[in-house]
Image 1: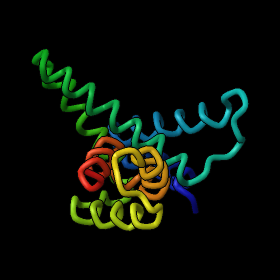
Image 2: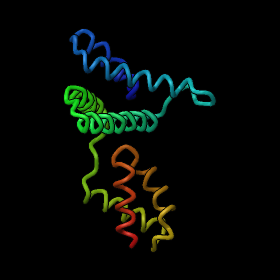
Image 3: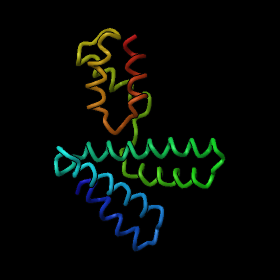
Length: 149
């Protein structure tokens, strides 16, 4: 069962449990999946990597919104965003720690034969593909820059 099907089943469970936050969050995830599959020129099915990317994007959007709400002292709205983040993150793989990330990127650097910051694009491409869903892009870029310099 892929992530899309799991979330579809979880929507039914959330309805039965009358878990409003979980239900709304999962419905918005399903909507995002549907929009991606029905977009012009898109494939009619999503790969596991694509579903993870969509969920990560949703988490990032909610983190940004929560930050803005907190700055404006809208604590109740910020809390709603944080609750939704918690639901979405339960479907994402466990993120890499900094040590695991450095080890994985070190292997990629050796594999690609990179030695300087000039090769950052090559390493970033391979790292983003390999680490998709397990680390944020900014963390990957910072670690690549650190290891290549």
